Image (cartoon, rainbow, N blue to C red; front, side):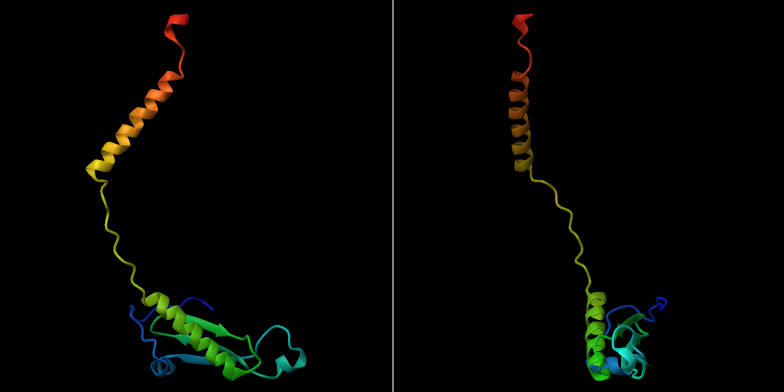
Amino acid sequence: MPAREPQRPPPYSLDRDILEREVEVQVFRASGPGGQHVNRTESALRLVHPPSGVVVIAQDSPSQFRNRETAFRRLAERLERLNRVPKKRVPTRPSLASKKRRIEGKKLRAGTKQLRGRVRGDE
């Protein structure tokens, strides 16, 4: 199934009644284990939500009713993720005191490293 273009930007409604009106339900035969019975029943569902372009498939259960519930639950989760607006990041600057502490630590470290060098009087 190719990805579909959304018809409108978020937010999308998560209400079940509204979703049932907006969604295109396609029923088809499930794949996978189940023997001959799987070839007879059309229990798998594909929900296409045109406003967002989201496509959800459910073929977990042999029952079309349970697959419908699963598909609507998955669709609501996907729409919830699409509706989430990330918080704007506020860049922070290090404080003057933290800069001074960092410099002091570097000076101490440099002093200990300098002591590890050769002694000048031994040459």
